Amino acid sequence: VLVAEAPAGPVRVVVQALALVLARVAVVQALVAATDQRRQVAKVHHRCTPVQKSKSILKCDRGEGSPACAVEAFADARGISRGLLAGAILLGLLFIGLKGLEYAEEYREHLVPGIDFAFDGPLADGVELFFVFYFVATTLHALHMLVGIGLLATFALLMRRAGDSRTRAALHSAALYWHFVDVVWIFLFALIYLPGRSS
Amino acid sequence: MVSWLALLALLALTVTLAYRPLGAFNMVAALAIGTIKAAIVAAVFMELRRRGSQNAAAGLFWLGILLWLGSMDFLTRT
Image 1: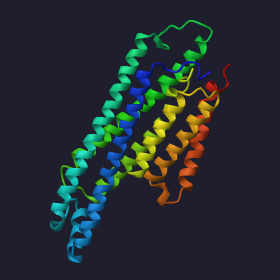
Image 2 (image 1 turned 60 degrees about the horizontal axis):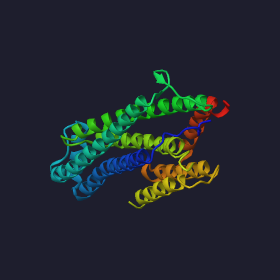
Image 3 (image 1 turned 30 degrees about the vertical axis):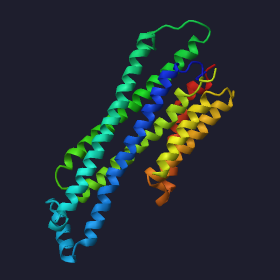
Image 4 (image 1 turned 90 degrees about the vertical axis):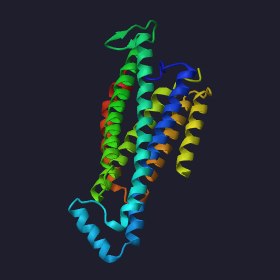
């Protein structure tokens, strides 16, 4: 029943595949951003003397930021991280934008169950069921993406100041969330956009 | 980087296969490739290859039950 009517049109599948690729790029960017700073911190800590290290722990505990020996390296890593986060946010917004264009197109074609649905023929029931699934699944996914974009933006702002270990751990968790939302899209793509292409 | 390229290659493969008339195998192939992609993301990007995956497996099990029950209508309606 689900396979009755895939959203059609080669242009749209290419656009959608492109959006998927871009979303993946965004995911990679976010991951790099998340790990880069951790590596830098590890490097910096390697260079620090034991006294400096203990100071840095004290300062981090008090939330005063990084130790003197680490300030420059932190600034570099933070700049890169923030740039990558900005890239991931822009790509995520591009994905949402493409989704909006797609929804507008479906509305024009009277394919939105509950709002404006008109489809003739023996497959009408199956098509309606498909679009209920389609809208529930993709809207939920888009809402989770908006949450993810908000999280990344929050960390990009937080990183204007020297990050402490708590910020890094939290960004790490945000990256894991982002990847999970991405995994969901992998299956939605296979279930929604690929079936019915060959006929 | 390698895993990212592998994901891109799998995306190209799955889109190409979707345009070949393979009957029921189209859906099988799409879901199989999707599963491989998800496994790569989970292992590399979600860092599961570097730690025990019992917790992830347990979470996946319960998520599977939720999705299975949630998709009853779509799986059974004729």
